[in-house]
Length: 78
Image (cartoon, rainbow, N blue to C red; front, side, top):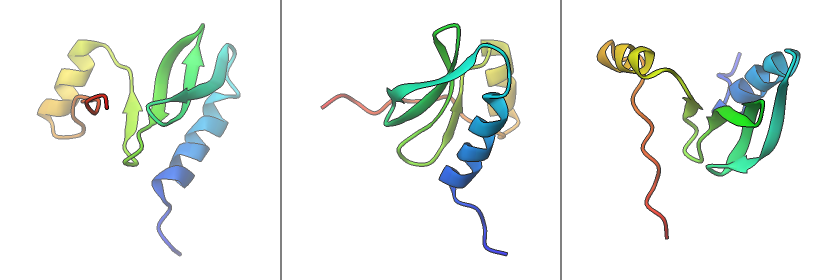
């Protein structure tokens, strides 16, 4: 079985979260559609294929320290 692409994995996540009350898929942010709740983005797929989620700082720091993720660094504009 072939490995799934980041787009395929993100599509699975989107499908799952869209079943939850209040979650919508809005526009294009960071080059990809974004999952939102009450108008606030909480997940997207970056143009480079990285899964980006908005987390509380303490949780994000713990994941980065454990090398399970890294802080999001937007590309410089223009």
